[in-house]
Length: 141
Length: 141
DNA sequence: ACGACAATGCAAAAGATTATCATTTGTTTG
DNA sequence: CAAACAAATGATAATCTTTTGCATTGTCGT
Ligand SMILES: [Mn+2]
Ligand SMILES: [Mn+2]
Ligand SMILES: [Zn+2]
Ligand SMILES: [Zn+2]
Image (cartoon, rainbow over all chains, first blue to last red; front, side):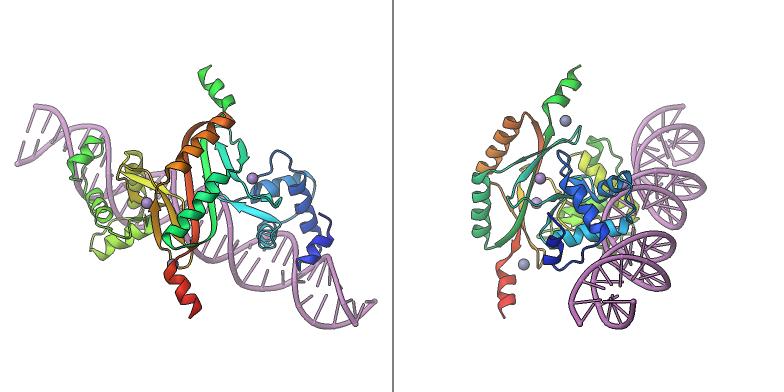
């Protein structure tokens, strides 16, 4: 949260890092942001940070465990504050809406599958794609 | 399989398309190939096909339902012959090994989650990442 | 305040994929 | 079978996202 946090993970407390943290923390519903999203948000706030720095800092935050990186369909990486609790995502392919969920049964089954194939599981990614309720309404109209 | 298949889906029977089909069909264990992989395989066979054509044809085959496209971690799209039966993947992050599985319980739970959130599910992708047995052995040594 | 070293910004580079367009090839027709 | 037309190809340029090089600036412990 505060900048002492950065020191703790071995990163110097710089203006770009503080600003980027602020953006991510105050993102609200738009928790899932690409580097470009973060960059634009910074500019809108009047903070002039280079795009390359945004990329660098996001990667550092990811390695420090502050952020989680996702690979939604469509190319760019998206990041979100790591709130400690793992979750997966369901996305609307029409409007880009994102919802989060955790399903203990699925989590458990994944581990079982890894075991069965002799893998030590390090990570997994599950994305469900579909059309949300609002977008279905619009389509009918 | 044969080239009449191409006609059926509205694609002209051209040399590049036939060659690319052959590569994909005879891929064996290396079923999952990137455009670059296919391109290199063609060159090794002495078939001079342009990289742009490989990209175009793979996309066309995907749209025709002959191929399935996946987004494994690491940037490039990978393709595989569509054998009709859906499956998910578990990958070794050390050696690139890929295994395939189907878990009815997970499939079912995904549908339930989509319902719960009011989505009409159109697709989903599940990748489990880990270290395979062979690679664990090597690490210990 | 000083100095060592990390961090930044800009521009160039890289990697993957798509678009452009002149030329070639496949398919249809007579 | 050859002409005619449209579709497909290949070389290259362009795009998009992300990374890198490097000179300059900023941070932090002393
Ligand atoms: Mn999330
Ligand atoms: Mn597969
Ligand atoms: Zn929607
Ligand atoms: Zn392995």
